[in-house]
Amino acid sequence: MTKTADGSEVYWDGDHYDAFNQPYEDDLAFYLAEARKARGPVLELACGTGRLTIPLKKKGIDITGLDYAAPMLARARAKAAVAGVKIDFKAGDARNFRLGRKFKLIFIAFNSMQHFGRRPELEGFFRSVRAHLAPGGRFIFDVFSPDPRYLTRDPEEMLPVAYYDAPGGGGKVLVNETYSYDKMAQTSRIVWHYRSEKTGKTVKKSLNLRCFFPEELQALLHYNGFRALRRYGDFKRRPFGEASMKQVVVCAPVL
Ligand SMILES: C[S@@+](CC[C@H](N)C(=O)[O-])C[C@H]1O[C@@H](n2cnc3c(N)ncnc32)[C@H](O)[C@@H]1O
Image (cartoon, rainbow, N blue to C red; front, side, top):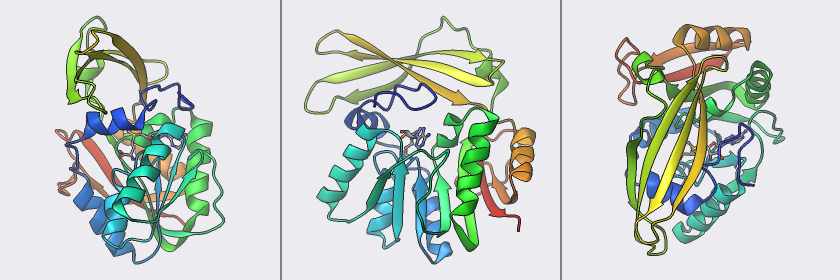
């Protein structure tokens, strides 16, 4: 599968994904602390290549991962084997899943919830999460806080976003980005242009990220049976505010 359900193509290759995101681990200590607090099984939705799943498992967390994209799961399974950990990585759609068991913590990290754009998709997602939460369970996610300066970017403008070593010794890859904001769908339409310095070839891949404005997010949680217990602006647990780039939300289901 080369596209996720929302049309995003950037998960076409787990090796490239990891090489691109290599230094990023700002969220690891936060999710590890929350997983420890849960004192029970943990489910990571949209787990990708196991960037968080594998280190959490290595720290003793009983964790299951679920993702839509076969190339991401293939990479996750290969990395888990190398790391010597056994993780049940499941292929599935977070917008509608049934695993036949419950979890003390369900989380979806790194803006992945922004792949669920339309109301029925979000309703299916929240319904599935609720159905898999054990009593006293928590649901945690992080998404961007939309920044009006970003949304009004010139769609012709190309900005560099990454420069990494291609997997398998393929030389350097420079990634430039174009951005346009789809006002009707409240969705950032991003294209990443991957240019291989070795071959001179450029490959283009789309990335769609639905924007969640803070008050809208609160309403969505409310009408889908969740209560925000804590709302942070970053992974250091600073309170969410005007200057926050992220919305990191710890929720409980309303019974
Ligand atoms: C930004 S990546 C995050 C991956 C991983 N959680 C991480 O932090 O590195 C987004 C992930 O969402 C997954 N995804 C997108 N739509 C999905 C869906 N409908 N169900 C499950 N996973 C989905 C993609 O395949 C991709 O692995």
